[in-house]
Image (cartoon, rainbow, N blue to C red):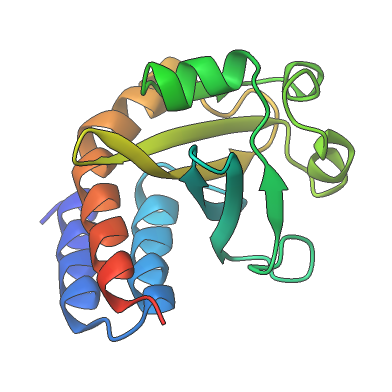
Length: 166
């Protein structure tokens, strides 16, 4: 059994046993870290009707608490992720700074690259899975692995989390 196969089997078992939104996203976080890698993992819901994003999950509650909400800003990130439903990839802190107002904090946490994967249910982006790592980490091979290995599990975890949301 390969490491990825084991990680997927562990994810399936954990997601099947999940009884809370947090447990569903815990399973996805563990799978992501075991396959693609991430120093910081969050999930943000996206409500484009009210133009508000809410942090539904974090693995760093001190710096990125789940109580966090922020307005959705119309910029190139919005166009790419929420309109065209494509992943956003950035491998430098300078580029991250052009779309995220918290770039300084991202840098202080030792991160300088990001992938925001839109989670699509019913043809609409309902959330984004956000993974961050050191600058230059999300090379094309890792992004391909993310798309090939994590897109379906991420959507499944999001659907289960929505069912279990308090």
